[in-house]
Amino acid sequence: MFRKAHVFFTILCGGSTAAIMIAMSLLYLRVSEGNLQSSRFQSFQNDIGTITANLEQSTYVSMQWLSRLEAQSGYIIYVTDNGVPFLHNSLNGSIDLHSQSLLQESLDAYDTRIAIEPAMPDGNSYSGIWHIEYAFASPTTGDSYYASRIDIERDRSDTLIMILSSLRPLRESIHRQRILFAWIDAIACAVLFLFAWFFTGRILKPLRVNQEKQLRFIAAASHELRTPLSVILTSSECCENASDEERGGFLRTIRREGQRMNGLIDDMLTLTRSGANRFPIECKETDLDTLCLNACEAFEPLCRAKDLTLAFTLPETPTARCRCDADRIAQVLSILLHNAVSYTPPGGRIELALRQRRERRTFYEIVVADTGIGIADEDKPHIFERFYRAEKSRSAKGHFGLGLSIAYEIVKAHRGRIAVHDNPGGGSVFTVRLPA
Ligand code: ADP
Image 1 (cartoon, rainbow, N blue to C red):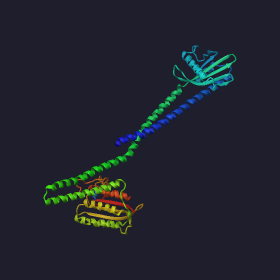
Image 2: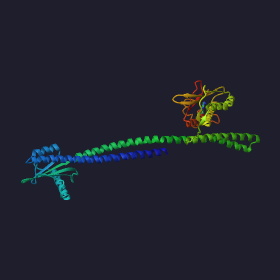
Image 3: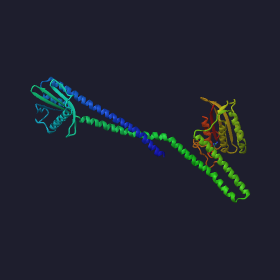
Image 4: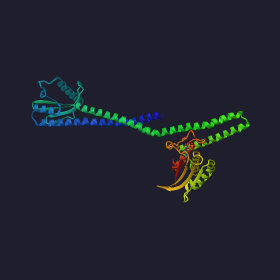
């Protein structure tokens, strides 16, 4: 499902940005090509202006001047004097077939233009020299040209100069520009899609991690519930054919396992509420000294029964009252002390300490240290995860791997921190920090 969503969002995100980019580059190309064409036509018209100015000043049209002009400007120039071709650019004294047809085509294009626009409003005339510029495409070669027809009317001569400028270089530079833009767009699209892939991947990652967590939670919860349930089912089957004395034992087992299931379901509900970000805490002024003392008193019998020493250290000066949810903090203390008792062998020592500290700000620190089996470094990052148990094979009954995750959520809801590290003398030290 996430793979599909990843692909979908990549296509959506990458495709839309790529479409916008392509549309913008097409628009830019269109504008730039238009500008290129109009500036090319403008410079052609300027050149023609200069040529006609020169022609005005001279009384005749010089062959050398025409040849030089043709060589320098790259224009194709045809001249007819009273209808006779002026062969300034011919080697063998005659105009070649291609040039002849090009000249004819340019004249035809001019005639068509006259037919379409008989008034010829854009023609320019200076004292007997009359010229007009236009564009046409050669029907035989398909090449496009800018053309200028210059008519010079003087006394008894009627000279026609046709100047053609091939648009092939312009077309080639436009083509090169298009190819360049196509490459830029292709590379940019690839980069965009790559970026979209990583970007959407990053966005979807928390959702995927969350879903995986939920699935793990459900799987682990089902697994944990199945064990007491199967014991209950087996015991109830055995009850049917058991003697009165045996039945009492089976019923006790059923009750015990039922209570275990009840505790587990309570824990799961607590965690479900924290997952929905509505962990219920009711903060009020609380005496942490009393809270710790009560927890100590509650665990005293259990420690004595397991031959464990339980020590409680209070700060020298009485701590100020802390704003917290007393019941929830008592639950955290109970989880930590319960673990300390469970994972410390007989003869060990458990210490509970409360202190007020000040670093950048004041906070309360509750420390539960034991001389038990300790927690391996590779397990430390995971022990606050749901259903995680470091010592799976040795886990005592009633331990589902939920206690520390509940403690973590409670402390988090108080904007505090919970951490674990090794006890220098062996065992673990859990530290809970609550903001004052
Ligand atoms: P559990 O109900 O299994 O104790 P917790 O979430 O409270 O679940 O603890 C997770 C795991 O962390 C435990 O299974 C145990 O392996 C380890 N652990 C917790 N507290 C201690 C401790 N005081 N000493 C050693 N290991 C501990």
